[in-house]
Image 1 (spheres, rainbow, N blue to C red):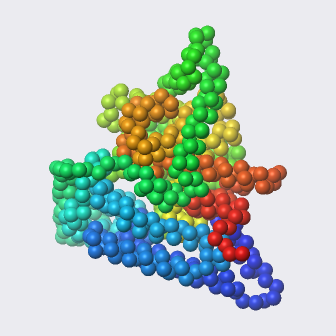
Image 2 (image 1 turned 180 degrees about the vertical axis):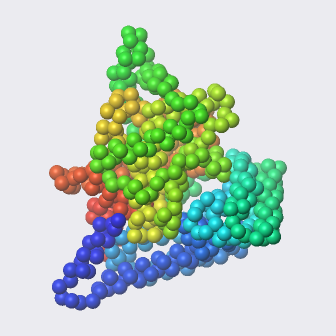
Length: 585
């Protein structure tokens, strides 16, 4: 789908009555589009792993060593490309190209900041986890299997050197990040030990060549094991705190979230939203109390009342072994409702595959969506579901009470339809590779949160008060994510304080709260993206509805918004509302 601003530009060009050729603006746009293609080509050569993940496979066989020289080479690249951007007059570019310009500029600034200031390659060993790229090459069917396996083989050649070099770069890493890297890398060894060998059996590659390939896979396993063993035994005299700190946090928020809100403003908004949700949840709990507790006395404390009601409703959940199949059954129900209410157009040609979460992805989130890159438009979209196999009965019960029969439905809205899966399908249709490649996390996560409310507001679940109450609880997760992330990384919130916030004020189960603490200790800023994106999308929708008055239609807004790919919400707002920042008078 072409953004509205781009359509307008095309219309103006086609409707000239004087028969003249392209304007200077047209020529500038063409030149800039040519530049973006050059920029992406150069970027994938610098960072081939990233290129592979977004579906650009020219450099699949390359593995860039993590040396200081290569980092300086990348830094030089960012400076050269920043200078190249200055050749283009931002104000004279059409809206779609202007957004691309700003996205590229922001990404280059973020890369420079990461290399010169953040320096996470020194204190986050997960920086060196290459397994995901190798797994992508095995699992995605973008090329014949023989070709993918030969690229896999060539890429493995430098893995032993890669991990010897990585040991030179790591300095006093954060223990929490070290532990996660070790778990994920050891968990992903099966990609080389088993999956690669199984794939080779399906080919006609000569047996002698297969033996060479398998030998190299064994060397790769030993290299990874050597690195994780070194990390495990590393004795840091002064390990870095996992907490990012206020200054780094503000910078990372600026580059990754790209919001009209500052981190402090976003935190304040989240605190106010929490108060509102508690008020609404209290009213619903009072309404539902007689249905579930008869004439029993209600708790006087509102949070205790809400907790009692949620605890009762949470008892309705599936068995551990049915968790994945229950998710699979939700997908057609959500699809039918979106079509019935005409909320937006779904593409039946892009199937969603529900699968067990791969081991190399485990340890951060309980579920996620992996979509094909913008160069792999026909690839599979996976709904990765964490397995409960091996969990103790107590831990599994706690987790399933969190993902009860009400939350399960909302969870599937968020991750699948009409949330992440739907948004990413639209993003891959965007004519702008830049917007798809550099997808804004707050826009992506914000859309998923926004759709939960949209579905309930449209009557999903027959306006059942139990479902609305449990959505408020679920929505508190996004709100408290923002409060938690900011408080932990800038204000020193302790684990005990965090657990109390999550269990007492967000009504989360202990297992969920424990997992969230782990997540906030191995990530930063990303947890704010849910509420930031949601808040900005709601701000935009309200402004758009006010602007169009009786001409406003929800489906039109949804599809117009999604037509911008995964651009930052503030850029989409500037375009939709006509506030073209950067344009000259």
